[in-house]
Image (cartoon, rainbow, N blue to C red; front, side, top):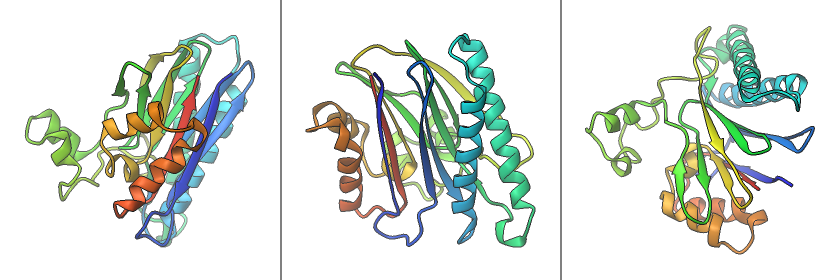
Length: 244
């Protein structure tokens, strides 16, 4: 049985929460988890993240079948992401209030022995078990490009002045390409999806400790939020933990 928990919060500074998440149980013990981190004006980021979450989740739920192979399941994720992108992009054209809005997206479709992880932007998915933790996704951000070029370390990237500049987003252009990763899974493995409001506040090792050695998995997202807020949490904080 796959278990999943999620939590989102405005953080310690911002009045509005522009993050959204969804956990959707699917037939044959499949599960979909999605985290979106919106950007835009006072209302636009909130609208973008919620709309992307809803459209993506509904399309996956309507299209996925238990007898699909991984290639077919990936096609479902990519089609849902394209629909979410169109929905946000077209909504952004409705008025000046929504102009330029967009959102990140990280999603995990958990199958029987694997997960397919899709991402656009800098929200992340981590694989965690008793032996290791690693980031499955690669940020689509300016600082990540600088890290890859050897100009910054990952720790320096967390506090760099342009750390919030992303190179891909849902809804800012007519088309956007998502990365999709396959992650083998077995009993005892976990996936942690989060917005950068969490990953900027905690080191990977700290998140690993809370997932593996924390008191209970069902309050892990709450503990992660409390740590982020104790450090000032200048951004919205969202996490979803999926455990096998």
